[in-house]
Image (tube, rainbow, N blue to C red; front, side, top):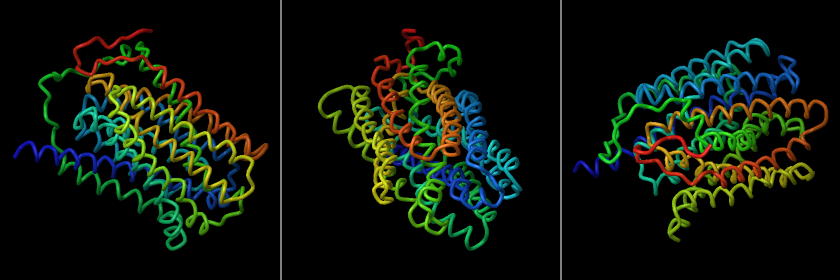
Length: 410
């Protein structure tokens, strides 16, 4: 009976990581959905709003370099609990904001906590799932981001219209504490693989010198700002570009994130189909990344179409592509490295993600203030091409059995 119980338990662990990511994105999206209201209320320009986003991304970037190694040392049970408790408290505190400065401060604190979600979730998947199932498991885990972002516009718009914008932050923030209690009750240690001895986490410097790690990190610099643009700026684009009200944003703003959810599932299933041809897991994932990165280029024509329906359709194609690619990117570190290094590698990669998010968010604010959203869409239709090339040319290495040295060609 032990084996079936363990097999069922891994899906419970995945479900919890999925729910944590839903909450993570509900918290993150609260400000984005409220932006059309708060920017008017507090007289905040697009440039100033980009600085508030940058405050979040700065904390997110710094803490990713810390949270990954910390999670490898604390373990999934305690580490995941602490990170969600911190970001939930920061979300509740945002209800007390009185202007751009305080919004930036509370978003900074949110970034400190939210930085731990992806290293923790990827660590849980690496501990509980075999290589052939990790793309699917990663897709399900990451689909929480799309579900959270999809639920945010209608739910938060309704909450703000019904109870006021401050209540939106409090309601969503409290969900994290409910999750934390459930996690502490349900979590169990993963089964030990005798072929993979339990080793301490590697030093950060040994990882930084590894070509796979720094090239993987560089790919995140160019790929993830695309997603940040849609999550942070899409409601404001609907208001500025098409004159949408908060209620209209609530009715329409979920669509690109619904297709992102489908992309997560499609990314995992496509890789499973490619694996049946006999190629390696690393090759199958890279092929999938190329296919879905092609969908992300759809953002480019969104810059020049005048139809709101066509614009949303193109943006939705891009978010579908991003999530399909990410479902495979999430699994790449565990293919190449032992589980004791995964959270640390993902933490470093997320630093690259955060750095790219900061830079391109500031660029977005400047372009919107001085020109329009048109050059912004052209920019984010181009970045995925660079990211896909970097992923495809990653070193073909595998030290997943924890018995090989961590440093590859540099």
